[in-house]
Length: 414
Image (cartoon, rainbow, N blue to C red; front, side, top):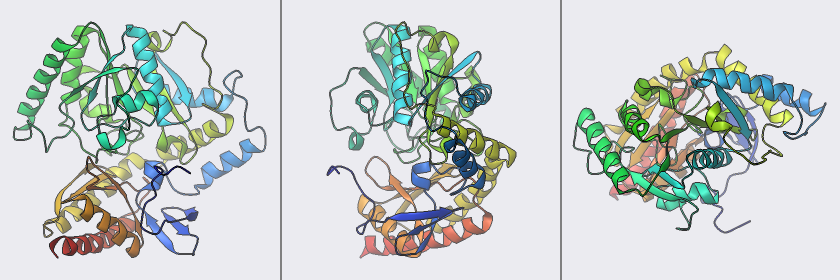
């Protein structure tokens, strides 16, 4: 495997089994999973409804490709289109979030006949050549070469940058002026703005509610498409909304929405939702060998039905709110913790330095808790458990994370 393929922890962890909100390593030790394989185990490990759907479909046929109809794919597309909020929506399935964003960029640039793209600073949209080219986070951008001309705008990080001192209304107004100024410097037609409603790899940062709606008003005047990258924010994870864009719904839904991760609950499934006019703009042949396979869409359909039937969005709001407040109470007495932020079960804990974050990550593992890490400098702990997390598990995890943060804080001061 390549040297750039990073592994967490000084002593790499091999996970061999999962159940509910817990996983076990090769030595038999159990961990409470607060990261879900990068926000991907959305409902629960080994969810019976999903494993049953996978096993039954695998026993019939594993693969056919998009050249043939598949009932699960059609039914899932209909459900996703209806849930998306996009009128006259069409759905194209992919194998990952990277591929979904890559497809969205293809659609936008073909529709607008332009390779100019607006993106947010501190953003992350995938690891393909095109998505690396629009990623606004240098830690995840290994090359400056790109098929796209990317223009970066302010607004995604509320607590830093030149507008951090302003109130929310002033922050939005200043960010809109920056967007308009950037468009004045663009040459010709800009294809789209792509934005994560809550930045994932960037450390779970988010703008004030309404920022993207204000952006949309400017975009509409220029005919520019809005792509909402919901790879990490979709399916109710933020608690208050089913999609992240709904916190910015004042100017209507996005033109294009991308999704992945949680919908497959571990299966490789992503996709793009777009207005029919945009989705159907391609004038060349295109298929997908693996996107929307019989097995992955069967899993996705079962997973989505479980999520809706059990109101896991509501659970994310309730349990996530309790967990956030518990962590904020802990952070109040720890100088090494700069901020606890987030929505629902998408919580970021920003620490004083990357070294402190690395120490906290290791200490959490020692306590029996798995969490993630991100941020522009790798100084943010990412807390994103499965959406079925119970109150008791949230309290247990908060206690373990408190001990890990205290260990990291004492190391920072030593």
